[in-house]
Image 1 (cartoon, rainbow, N blue to C red):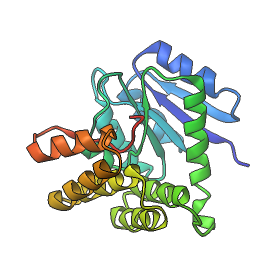
Image 2: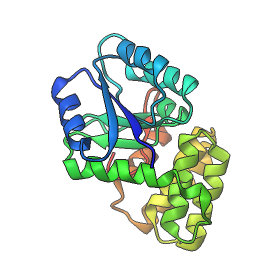
Image 3: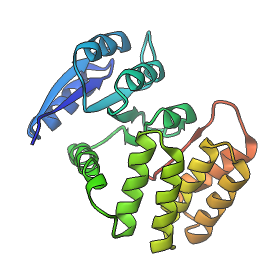
Length: 224
């Protein structure tokens, strides 16, 4: 198995240290960057497999780092680091292929489980999906690769296999919103809430989308 390269980009030293120490036993090659400029400089000479990225940094913000690194390394898997209380992520980040999120505060277990899920997702292409969860991961893989039409196909197949998940309808709504079909997005947010009236991501997405406020954002999962 190849050694995967990880770049952690955060202006907070304790975040960089925590992530590095947590991942130390996972057979990963880990580098850190204190800002966007350093991250881009390191990405020029190294092809990274996984990128932990804080969107809010002094100087070059994380969104610009995401845009430039995705342009030069489209296969890199991006994990957005979000602060507690600011779980909504900009639509533009989704469009650029960011689909995995780590909300502060987080536990070492959450970090390792997320990285393990991303690594497993790489092998999905080699087997035929057989269950709801696999189709959802196929959809997320397609989002990361900015193949939104394909992601819609996969999430619809997940729904066909198991209709009773608010998560899938919320993801489908988010994808339609990215594609510019607000009416279809809202329909799916409402279906998600009819399945689970307490499902906050769909509730917040519906609330935001009906107001069409500039700068608001899409929420994909409960943990964001």
